[in-house]
Image (cartoon, rainbow, N blue to C red; front, side):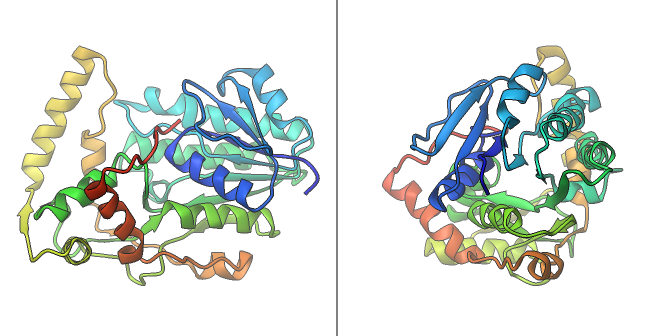
Length: 319
């Protein structure tokens, strides 16, 4: 690659991990910064201020770039109007800018939720974003690939990591239905997959996971967390669907009155109650030679020990 790798969503949890990986492998990076500074300094890193709505910022971001890695996304919201401006329109605008600049490669970090767009406005927006990318780059002048990671965890994660730490204290909420299974992925492995796809000619849509075939049940996750934390079996607390939906509806009403963006909504309950969020790595491994390196016990060990020692884990946000 002769030009920099342009990265959106740079200051977020995933964005920081991807940029750190690219820099470590000697890639020049140009990062789009929106709302908050990027706590990374490196001779190969340059930044561009602006959002996905800013044509001038996008033009500068992609000028001379060898590839675009589009990570920016919104995960909290009430309706499609909260998600679509970034998750759909933002993808289209970034793809249009890349195409106009003659960028040869575009990688979209989407979500496994896009597999089930009927479940929630968020899931629908992620699928629509993928479709927008395909429409804009339909002429193949810019090769594009989509990653659909499952639930991602790691240092700086503000969604799963607090739950893992609660489990490590012996309290495991269990919101999923009986028999439900889901894959997981450490953010470092996701960053490794992005790097592999930059160096491969793979195209299309790829799901990926941490190498644990068939995913995890809630009890399995709790068992692993408790073992890593060095404690015995804790409390497993089933959360009935009726309770989840009541709380989610109340949260949604409060968000409308108080004007905040909620995480737990009726759509999110649909996602939590979905029985199958299991991935398969075979297609990605064949296409790009990528394999995960961090199974759940190894991925969790430093995160739970960081809590005990009080180490700073950095800043996180979706965008």
